Every structure is written in C-alpha cells, then in structure tokens.
Image (cartoon, rainbow, N blue to C red; front, side, top):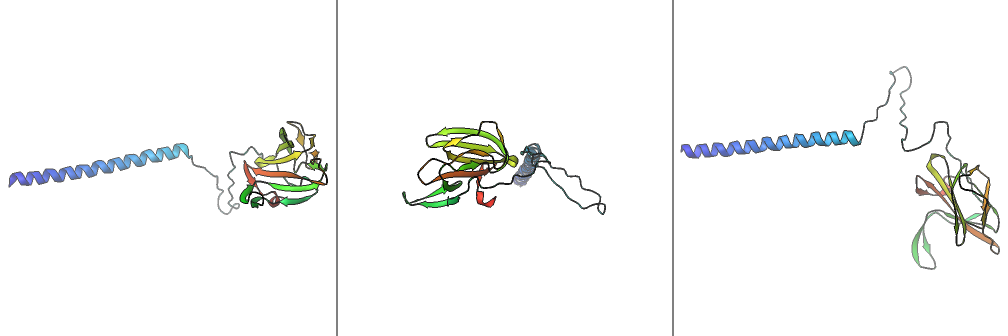
Length: 196
C-alpha cells in the first residue's frame, strides 16, 4: 500500500513539474516575441498638447517619402489634346478573344501633335524603342508618368520640366495616332482619369 501511494505521489509530482515547465516555456516565448516586436516595429510617439489649450491633432510623416513640407502635391493635366480610346483596367481583346489588363490609357490625337509633360518633374528615362521613344518623368510625392511611343523627343535625361512643356511629338502616321499614357504612385499603376 505504501509503495502504491508513493508511486501515485511521484506521478502527480511529474505532472505538476511538466505543467510548471510548460508555463515557464510559454512565458519565455512571450518575452522573446515581445522583444522581437519592439526591435522590428518601433513605437511611434506623438506629442499631444494639454487639453483645452489647442485642438489635439497628430500628423505622422511617412518616412519612405522624400517630400518636404513645402512641396505641394502635383496637379496633372492631359499630355495631348485628343481623346481616350483605351481605358485603364481590364478589357477584352477583340483579336485574341481574351481578357487583358491595361496599366494606363490610350490617347488618340492627330499625327505629329505636341505631347506635353502632365506635371512638373524630372526626366528620369528616355528610351528608344522599335516603334518610337518612351519618356518617364518623376514627380513629387513619388508619382511617375510614362509617355510613348513618341515620334521624336526633346526631353533629355535629368532635365527639369514644367507642366505643359513639350517633351515630344505623336507618332507620324496617316490620320490620327495613338499613344500610351501611364501614371504610377510608388510603382503602382493608377487610373490617370482619376487624377486629372
């Protein structure tokens, strides 16, 4: 009888010891996760004024943007006097009979029409393609615009352009020609019609 009782008591002690070890492991894991969280996701502190003195407002600047407080957001305009013949987004290709995604708009205008910068910015790319030139302009607030194909271009790499400055001419074809105009924000395509 004594041996049976001591055996049960030893088994009970092992269970309690196992529970204590598991609890300590959970606490240790929680501390490790909290330290990792603090290390990789630091807290954002905001100074809040004394209530009643002034309204409580908090602006947390985006650290990824290189925009200064004095720089206004860009105002965009259409780069060519024409019409939209291909809208932004998904469309059904009549030739291939399949759905495709267009990350810009297709603009139609008379051949050799002037193409202008949609907003103030800096020319970051001028590429010669098989069907003409493509020009990329970087604007404030991480916006970029893409124009092409162009028959000729007057834009130079690193050149500062103002909204409305001529950067090239529409392709030289009989009648009207078509050009792609794209707008991105931090590399993600946006519908230009929503910004104009």
